[in-house]
Image (cartoon, rainbow over all chains, first blue to last red; front, side, top):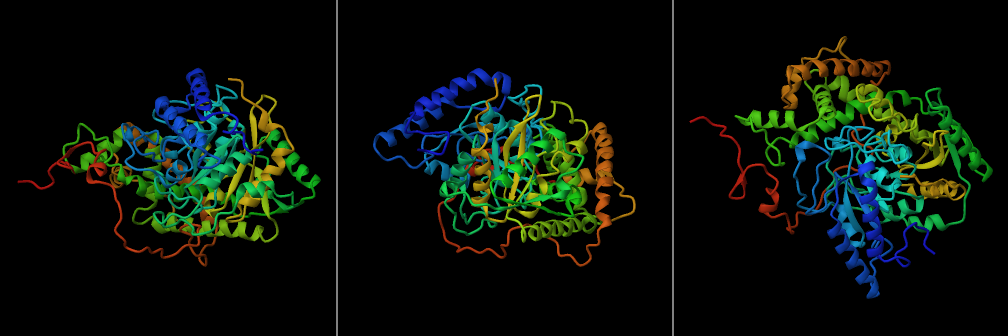
Length: 477
Length: 97
């Protein structure tokens, strides 16, 4: 029997795709997860999958499985906007590495999912096109930046989804929408064909309704790619086999800096209960310390905008779809196209990054931040001398209301407090549901692993998930 | 870190190649000022003996063989350009006559 929620031996790909198209038609007016959908193209992919299966030649466990794609990953011939006006009308001329692999696996690539503009945000509200609503409470955000991916999964509009995570952009929306999301070790998944935000932090990762669904998707997309010079040339373990292994007690660390008064009491109680659960399964629970935790947000908000200011310089009115009609000379083409095409949060971060890299401030901000980044990474490596995984809340608060934090950038940045260190240190992290608030909002817990220890991380998450019923809860949309 | 970070918003906007309205300049100047204040807490740490981390993966000097292979066609490479002619991107004249 399949460990996954999808099983194409039971339902044909065409039937699965038809029912998802109907579901999207019914709920999209309320959710707004998709920027683009092409039902005819998806059905053609589904028919090809069924033909392979009928001929006895399915391409693997993902053949005919419906996967939503965040709108910053290139799928040849499909639109890609990064939820930005500056890329309106852009059509990808090539496939990302992960898309090549998913096509080879027979997956049905379904639609373009909303996000914060260029992945800069924690609520999808910086999207230039539309708001996405949290399926558990339509007045609230789905989190971000991969909020379209998380909302589509929670609303039953796709079976698995691709997200990307630079500071928590897979894990935070997963927590807000009651689904599972994994940020892999930096370098495990190729970034070729991912529109770059902050290259030293960005990772593509799997999102799904269950741990096993994420494991199956990670299996398909992980692996070395010579077109990404930071891609790690390592053997990819069999993640699904790891889930089927007998349970093995592990040592779990609770970083004391993550259990502070700033955490919502209901979230704190749910994560405490998870620690007790692991203890009841024979795991050892240890308090550990990550002393530089408080510096992670300033470090991140120097490094990520600095890298973004460089990466986004390519959107200059020359090669990418949008040029200002008022541009008289070359400088105008750059500055006016960008002034018209970028939204407020992107402008804010590009300005911040340009400032941090500018002559006279480079050492004081950028180099200092990179040094503190070393201290943050060393904290984790030291903690992992004593423990196998770390358990923390994914977010300090449940999903917040639409509009609640849009006027205060710093308040929005603080929502990332528990997730960004993991990117700075290049570690794998997974968020999975661990309860609901009394108002019915999902709560997520985060497990953080050693570099390239995804198999153990997934197994630890799976042990918790299988002993609880949260994976079966469905938003009533 | 400089004592009081001063931001010349016109200079920063020029560096960033972003045209800003006067209203935008006023808002971003105030918001960036608050964010920079928040960054000052990094001054608390002594990092004189710490090596910077540019990225977390232990990968250095990545080489590959220079082998010819299939690449994107010129027409695909410029297909998204806002102004193009004969397979090339068109820009305003940069040299005066």
